Image (cartoon, rainbow, N blue to C red):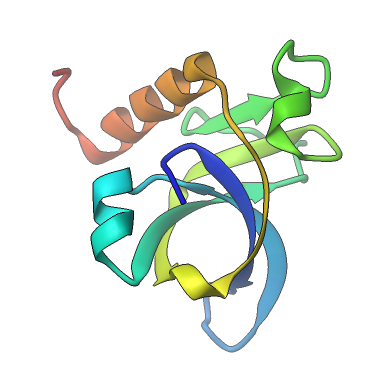
Length: 117
């Protein structure tokens, strides 16, 4: 599992009472993923009607859409970060392109108030 992978996971609801199998983006580094049973993920949603500045729209017309493994346009919701066991991954779908990863990293920096490196 590597940073930028899009996988299906059992995504926990905010109230932690239930979950659904949903796509998610791996944001933890490959080094972390190799040395831990956990990984950090960001939720991906097909509900795209109200995107916010922290969300990244992956349009079905984007030149790199096919590599994501997603079936419909989706939002990467950078404020929905969670840590789960890597074994909770149901399957690999695809990954994001370098340009998409840069956009996601930028939104994460803004969200967390981190300086540019």
